[in-house]
Length: 277
Image (tube, rainbow, N blue to C red; front, side, top):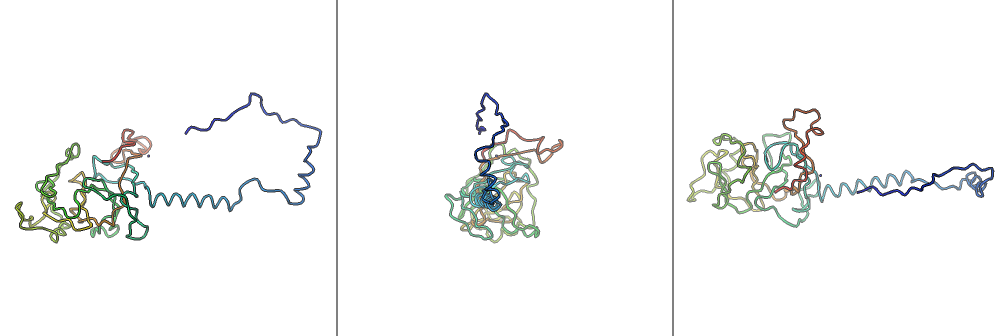
């Protein structure tokens, strides 16, 4: 998500006056043309190619290492992010990823609790056609944290983490829902704590306690009952982190608009420029 330079105009129009006299350099110009000594006044084809190549190189450099645009396709982060939001993501903050590798350059900070983070998903075995999509969720726990959920309330290091308004107003679903993908949690479960042992069958509202491994994060969507997040596919490795969303630069009602061409006719003007927290 400048003013055009002003042009001075003379009060007198330019007049092209015919003259019976030959210009002083007319003969010389004709002779030069005949001799093939005239210079081209426009850029050569090679100069145009170089200019286009330089522009593309600068664009790719910015997109790869500094900032990139992302579109929100689902409602897992409602109300922080809406379907149809377009974000600028700061890739330099957490360290830009070197293309086609799992190597990240150094950033100037690391994800913190409650940061909204863009990352490459851990393997999602239930969708082999796209096992590692780029996602955006909220980082709720860091390496070494002990986390669990009881009756839909998240605890981090024994401290309850209540969702603030308006996220707490999201529709609630069936908290007893158990998905086969939840079985990954058994490997990281912690038993013998005073809060009780982990449930035999983890559900969407009751799971853990788990300990976040070194160099990993745990991510949840703000829309807890409509979010396929860390409860399903586990912890996010540090090298999967791609950036921090900065603000919404464009948004339109892509979910339930009844207008033609909603990307033009149903723009959410009030969301443009929204800073993400």
